Amino acid sequence: MMRIIMHGCNGKMGQVITGICKEDPAVDIVAGVDVVDNRDNGYPVFTDIEKCDVEADVIIDFAAAVAVDKLLDYAVARAIPVVLCTTGLSPEQLNKVKVSSEKVAVLKSANMSLGINTLIKLLKDAANVFAPAGYDIEIVEKHHNQKVDAPSGTALALADSINEARNNEYEYVYDRSQVRQKRGAKELGISAVRGGTIVGEHEVIFAGIDEVIEFKHTAYSKSVFAKGAVEAAKFLSGKPAGMYDMADVIG
Image (cartoon, rainbow, N blue to C red; front, side, top):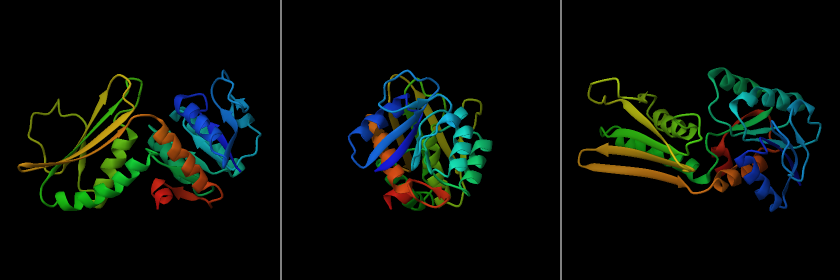
């Protein structure tokens, strides 16, 4: 049975993952880490990751960006692979993720759902059809009113998949309110909506002359991300040092 440390165990995603793992005979959460120990999770919870002395095969992280540095230090020191799901990392932290992956396996993804990662594949093909034909590209993402980072990491991942397919010819534009000019041909607009309890909605628009093609993904609950994280942990356990992503998991 694969042993998991749940980093951010008392958060919403940590609790969903805890529930999923209880129903999966192939995995067992042996310890949790969170800023407070205020729940009966059925496993020990440490408020300081450095004090976690429980042996594990992999760490699943759904915490906050401020906790990622200590998490990576812990994972490297103990040679435990980590599924890194926290978004909103600074450039310095992203560099630390890269450096850490040289010593331990790290799977980083802005979105853990199977649907989103399949969409990322599809967008690369779509971009190579519609971009040369002069179609404008826009991304609109919607999330709940408690989400602090904007645009979402998933929206940026979708944009990056398009831009990589097109040799990084697009410039990301997040706000047009301060500029009075028509849209540039190589702009890729990214808009963020925050409201209510929207779990996550991403729409990619290819707009041409008299024709609009839309790719849309809607998450109705957090379980789609939680299930993906658990499957990613199963994949990553025992892997050698290196950077991995959900494309490796779905094949």
